[in-house]
Image (cartoon, helix red, strand yellow):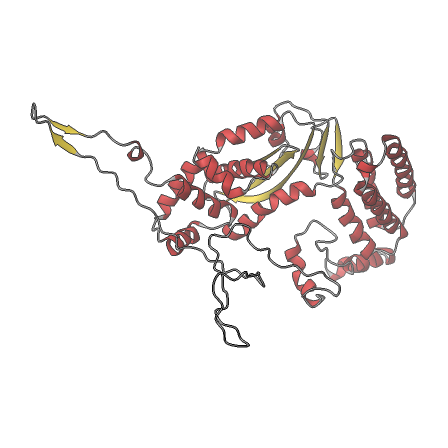
Length: 426
């Protein structure tokens, strides 16, 4: 906008323009921007580290089953110098431990086929090809370690190559590593199909997506999860077609997501993520002196407080509280305002009004936020930042299958590496 354009503006338009320019930038607290974008401001306002006054200290617990126990007992009295024989009763005064990792070296088993001459007929007989010689020379634990480091520690091929060399003395080419990982990823397809089948029977499903680079192009990493299944999938699109293909006609009772259009209309009811709305409200509260956003913030605080004890209340009580909260929200949304940010916020919340309190109808089964999906996506976001995405679609799909099986197993308390080793070695 040039000087001549500014001169043509009216007084009210100039005031509005100045107010817009004075609005603060959005942060992770007032929008969906990642916390890394406002880390500098947090550093400047940070408090000294360490335990706060009154904090109860914690120490590492001692091992209940140590590999070795060494008793250190005195052999002479410090008072008279007399000998203290080993049969005297003793008491434990203190216990300390030293923990060490053993040197890990690859175990190489060489299989040799032998040939002998038959003493009867003189024929040369060769031993059968051993089963281990028919496939890869690398065992299941090596496949599991490489898969774990690549997928869950976000190592690039170069760093993975260096880690295997430095830690275990294994020297593999990047092409060899790629083949090893591709073989391992194939073992996770049945587990992924089982998780997808479970998801398509779920009554409550939540979903979210994040951007990722695949084959040098922008693509998306999606996550869908229910009470007993988590499914990750890579797709070149962010459209609703991804949801339709994943659910294959199944319509859950409730869908949880943000307000993105592609994630709407896939269930009988929809619970909009209240955390997203709370950040939008926080931004308007900081930017405007209008009382309406402040009232919306107090309303959301009441909703979150109710969500913490939703399973402790009777259905009739929850129904009454839902009606009361809806009436309060209606009054707030009907309040006139001269602030354009407030009016936009009222319109946004008004469009989602019937999706805000669905969790009260399904206490304990439906969350008021979609934070669960965001937590499941966070490792993929870290992977994207560290490795800058995937060279090939098969790698993105393979890692999605691994995360599907591992995150589904985590719902029952199983560890990531244990799940990977069991799957690869099956």
